[in-house]
Length: 227
Image (cartoon, rainbow, N blue to C red; front, side):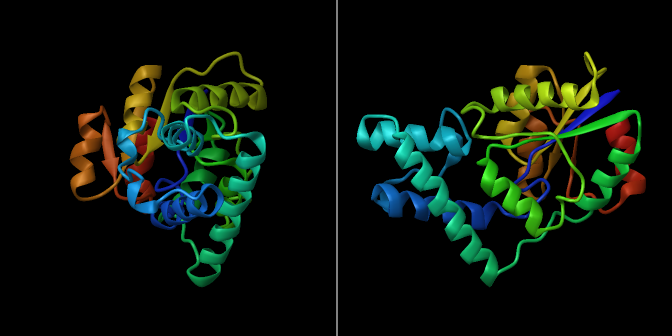
């Protein structure tokens, strides 16, 4: 059995812009950070995950990690802002995402999982909003670890348990970020990129075996993934 592991934001759900906006506003609301002083180039952070970025900013701005109370308040505020934003502009899934998940789920040769740098409660909310919660998919998220490679490894272990396997023959990670390709290379996973424009070049540069704009053409995409 082969494992196909997906990122979430920008990979299954078209949520990168709204997610970043709400993430940043929650930082201001809970911690009082100056928005103009926050580095929004996520690639500059040691761990490009919700937990990793938050801990880096707290260390930089406060000289310490967030307390458990602050962490809870931040997650709740982030979700509140996301709910408000989505009520004004509904989220959309990446084209063909539902179909590819259903196709893979129906094939006994493949297992599926989600490994996301998002918090669990916001990840579940986004999946529900676009109707991708109809299939149970083993998932690991930023609540499990700060580092993306650790989140991916956690998702791998949970998927082994769910499918009652001792190992998978191969693992392919599908993501839209350069950091997804870097983490895949560190774990010796195959990597497929999701993106268009200049991002295509960046994703190939970090080892993507192919880069897809979306999942609309299943007849062409499935052989690529299965290959």
